[in-house]
Each structure stands twice: as C-alpha cells, then as structure tokens.
Image (cartoon, rainbow, N blue to C red; front, side, top):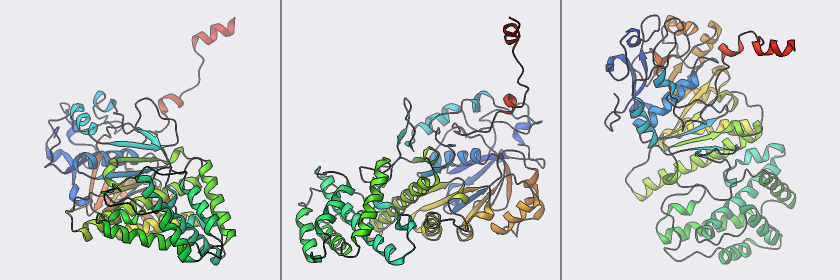
Amino acid sequence: MAQYSQQDNLLVLGWQVNPEAHPIYWLNKDATVEIQQDRDLARVSADLMDSHTVIVAQSGSGKSFFLGRLIEELLMRTKCRCLIFDPNGDFSRMDHINEDVWQQRGYDLVSGNGLLTHDTKNAFVTSWGMIHKRVRTRRPPGNGSIAERLDVWWPGLSNDILAAVFDDPIKRSELYHCHEFVKAISELQMVRYKLGRQEGTLIDRAEQIYNTWGDEKNTTDDIEAFLNQEFEIPQAGQVVTIYPIPFVSWSMHKDPVKREQAMNQVKRRAASALRYFTKEIATFYFGKAREYEATDIIAKEPPKSSKELPRLDIVDLASLPDNNTRYLVTNTIIAEESERARQNWWEIMVENMDDTRVPVFVVLEEAHNFIPEEPHNRAQAALRDQFRTIAAEGRKYGLFLILVSQRPDKLDHLILSECANKAIMRLDSRTIVQLVREKLGLQDIDPYLLDKTIQFKKGRVLITGQWTSRPEIFYCAARRTLQGGRDLQKKYWARPNLPTPTSFVQADK
C-alpha cells in the first residue's frame, strides 16, 4: 500500500473498527505502517465519487481532518481537480507536510485518538509533491509559498449581486443589460489582449465606449460599425486560442470562419445591450465597479483555460474582510468554473474531440452559511441558485459538490437531495440525529447505527450512500498535510496561570 500505482484507484479513508469503534489493526502492539492488510483499511472506489457528497458533523468531531484526507486521496489516486472554498483557513497550508503523522504513530486506547496513516512518509511526499497547488488569498505570501493574489474577473459577477440594492424590476432589468454590455466588451477586449494591445482596464474601456456611444441619437447599426472598426477581427492564426476561455464564447471555435461569426454576434450583443439602460443605471454600475476596483479585488487579466489550472485550488475566504465580499468572490469563481466546464463540454460534443475532461470537486466548508434553505439576502439567494444548478446539472459537466456543515437543517433541501454520498461524524444529541435522518433521507438506516454517532469520539465516520454497499463506520486515517485552523490546546489553557520561580524572585526584590 506504500506505492501509488495508476491501477490502484481505491481511496484509503480510514481503518476498520471493532464494536467500540477502535481501529482493529492498531490494537496490536506490533502494528506499524505499511505491513497492514487490505482488510484492515476502509477504502472507497474512486469510480463511486462521481456524485455529490455531504459531510455532517458537530464542531470538534474532526470533519476538517477527514475532509483533508479525502482531498489528499482524490488528488493522488485520480486525475481530478479540487476547488476548495475555505472560510476558516483550514486548507491554506496543504503544501506543507505534517511531520507528526510519522513521528507520533500509535493509538491511545484511553483517549481513543492517534495519527494513523497507512503509508510511508517517502511514498506520500513523492506523490503529493507532483500535484500542482495554489492558494488564492489576500494575505501576504511567505517565502516559497504557493499563494497567489485572490481576485475575481468582473464579467463573472452575478447580476443578482449587483442589483441587490434595487427593488424596482425595471432598474434591475436595466442593470442586467448594462452588465451584459460590459461582458460583451470583455469578450472583444480579449482579441486585443491576446495580440498584446490591451490598453487600460476593462471597466475603463467599457465606460469610455458608453460615454461616447450611449447617447440615444446613436443607432444600433452605428454602434456596431464602431465596434467592427475598434475590434477588428485579426487574420487567421493571429489569435492564439486553443482551449476555451471562460466568458469568451468565440474562444471555443478553432475554425476562423466560425470564430468570426461568433465575434460578430458578440458585437451585435454589445450594440443592442447599450440601448437598454439609462444614464442613471450606468452611473450606478460604473461607480460600483470603481468601488470594487479600489479594493484591488478585480482581476486585471482574464481567467485561464482549464489546461493551465492547478489541480488543488484553494480560495482563502478567511482572508476577506466581510461576508459580502466572500459572497461576491464565491459567486464569481463558481460562475467562472461553471462556464469553463460548460465550454469544455461544448467543445467535446460539437468539435467531436476525444473526451479527456476530468472531474472538478467543488468543496464548500460551512456550507449552511452560503447555501441556506432560507437566504437572508439576494447575494445568498444568488449563491444558492448557482449551487442548485450544479447539484442538478453538474454530473454532465463534470462538477461535483462536497459540502461540509454542522447544520444540515439549515442547508437547502434541493441541493441536499442530490447528494448521493453521505458522511456523518459526531452528533451532539438525538434531536440533531433526527434532523440529520430527515434532511439526508436516512430512514432506511438502522436507527441504532445512526444513534451511535452521539457516542462517537473524534475521527469516527459513518458513511452511507453510493460510495459504499452498506452503511459503514471507520476510524479516519491521518490527514498528512498541515491543517491551517485548529482547536485551542487544552494542555496549555486548561491549567492554572501560576508564576514561574523567577517571577517570585523578582517580586521579592
């Protein structure tokens, strides 16, 4: 089990347990890494991960530890990508190895805990080091860090978030057309960007075009003629676009004729949209865009194709100042990922290419704060609708959710109903157990088995659904990468704050 072969696609998630939920293998005093048998391990076939997953656990049950282990195994044993929205900073240090896993091996029968991995350090470090990783954050990067600046591409922003301040449906409609105009200009700007002739930011250029051509005396034909001249279609071969780029419809076409037709459609869309919003809305829209530009959260370059992306992509939401900014960033990045997946699907279907797509696992911690059953504002409602779409259509496009929450009763029921894989860790009461049973549709599970989650110690997991032939309890194998967030250290704080002998001497003086 120490070597990772391409043929072995079984995810090693934990250890088989006895009726008291102790890992059987590690009760043997001679137990050591690498000599265990397959029957000692709790494993899941990677083939069964092509569905949405929900992990439910109370605080302190080890859910981030288990989730980290699951992500490690997915990345090492498949070709997938993982996009993690991390509101607590638990995954920001996944480029670092947790040395304690190999230095403090062993299981403590009294506490019921232990860092128990099945592989050697060398085997893990070799495999994990081959995975391209990045952390998108607003924190200053450290030496040798995989951190990149966290920003978002403005055209990916949902109109619902922009229009959150408007109750008037007419103004909301005008704002939609204004945003569509800017999105069309961004597609046309891509031509100049690819040819190295980009001048100013997208917002600069879009506002300049609006100020020049937004007057009612200019017809749609006049505007389109200007766009034809301003964004002249380059000769075949000048635009180097091999893979689809999110929010750039013409990038899907390799054929120059089809590309020209698609770009002409974008120009008509921009010209038409310009006729459907007023000066008042334009002033509001560009003012709001300038506000976001001032915070330096707006990307200056367009998003990348899927061929250029890291396999482990962590969005450090904890580095953002408030919930509104977190909603905006999550909304925009999800839109970008969804658009990329749709374009890749379109390319495979229409261009009749070999299907070399890989799944993208979208991981959302504290999911109840982002996709609640009852949104508190339009930003939350827009996010919920995005995730509902992925839950309903994601399989076709290769997008799979992994949702983590302490409060499944607050999660959107439509999204939960699409989660075929379920993992339950420690629950605090029978009331919570009953809520979990109802929300996750676990009526067919033996009530005694589900009730055992109340007595679970840290690290125990009950899985059910598509990824196992029957409900199974196991002890989570060690997460081998560093966890960013952690609990307070009881051995430090739960002790009297007694003065040191030196303090007594100084006091006497």
